[in-house]
Length: 113
Image 1 (tube, helix red, strand yellow):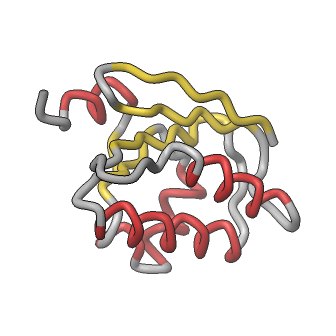
Image 2 (cartoon, helix red, strand yellow; image 1 turned 180 degrees about the vertical axis):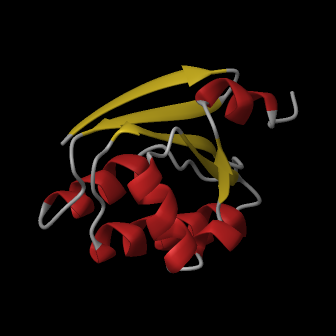
Image 3 (cartoon, one colour; image 1 turned 135 degrees about the vertical axis):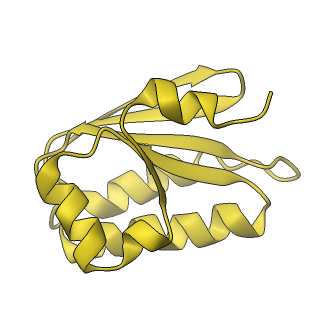
């Protein structure tokens, strides 16, 4: 799994490439946590365009980070989900918790600047 982070207008965009599976999901969680600063409401877009698979631990990591970000009055949204991951989000009911956008442009437009 590769993680590329860019920042645009105070929004950190995480472009993830490769499956999120045993062992690497914790690396992903640690990487996102690095961008959470004290006293600042974090803003994240998680771009899953090149992620073919997410295991249950990966979903748990996303849920834990989401709760942390929400507690800090920040936002974490998802973009570019393939149909398999979109179905997974529906089946696990996470689609009712996470904000999901078709692409990063729509996700970026959803933030107030």
